[in-house]
Image (tube, rainbow, N blue to C red; front, side, top):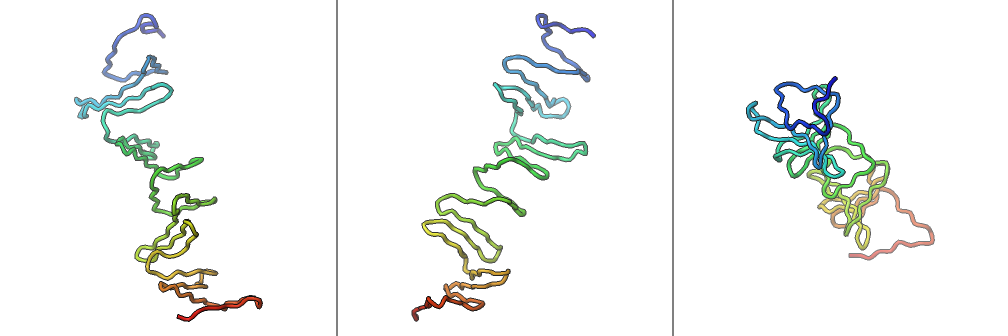
Length: 193
């Protein structure tokens, strides 16, 4: 094998109209980068993709904000897609596993969410809401007092063994499905009207 130039005697530019085979590629400089150019002569649009180092960071940069970075397997299946638009959308084919998840915005989940830990909502008037399309909206709210109930014009049912034990209608009347038992030391009082 032979060297082509040296660290003190360097070639300036090289142009190859074919395949370059190398065991290793080493780039050195203040701002080292590799450019992949979509040549217009080949039907492209003269877009450039850069792979480089900036400080302690590795970056990918494209000359326009269109298209995606796509990670594929040997079957050409798109496993993960990262968009170049300012929204920076990331799409993962299947499961995304992480030690923690911090979302500074809204989460839109179209499937079932399963958790083995607690669900905590912390905010002013923090609310957990469950809505049936065309049906009731049920909320758990933490405010100056705790609230559980419907915010839509629907009855609220408290279930036992998946059966309504107490039903509170939209006029705030409560119906008990079974017997109401009080200890002998207590009394149940009410007022008419």
